Length: 188
Image 1 (tube, rainbow, N blue to C red):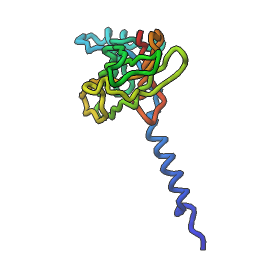
Image 2 (tube, rainbow, N blue to C red):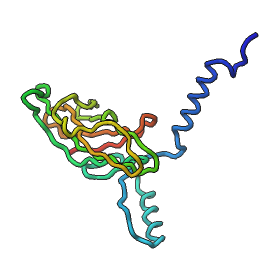
Image 3 (tube, rainbow, N blue to C red):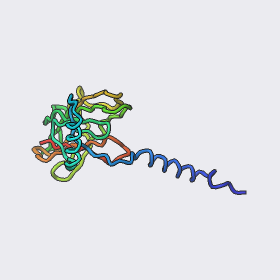
Image 4 (cartoon, rainbow, N blue to C red):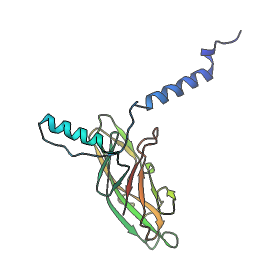
């Protein structure tokens, strides 16, 4: 006798994949947006006006250094960008420099979120999108990986190796493995 289809391994694999796909999508389109500071206004008409203005504006796709950008429960702020020619023991390739980006991540949700330096990439004017550089330049301040509790925040640096003097660098943050949504911050 043959097993019924619901007792076969491929059926359960397909069921798990379908459940994972359904649970990872919230049903609403999530876009990065500039995080709005807390307001103490009590007028509901002022709040409704602000909400309507936000709906009327097109979703911003690229942000600047110093802007708080929210995507889901993650709020990212690029606070500083530094460039370095390296040290005596650790230098970039010829005609390249290290770009050291200081980031702050806040958890605006009610559940824990993960953070990791591998969630960041950097694009340059040549169309290359690269991962972080393995360097000792920022060992004291480097962003580590971990989890943030609700309301928590973490700050650290991430170093990238890029062509020297490139004026079109863009930091890209992918806060969720299960989503292709990205926060893009222009570093000029």
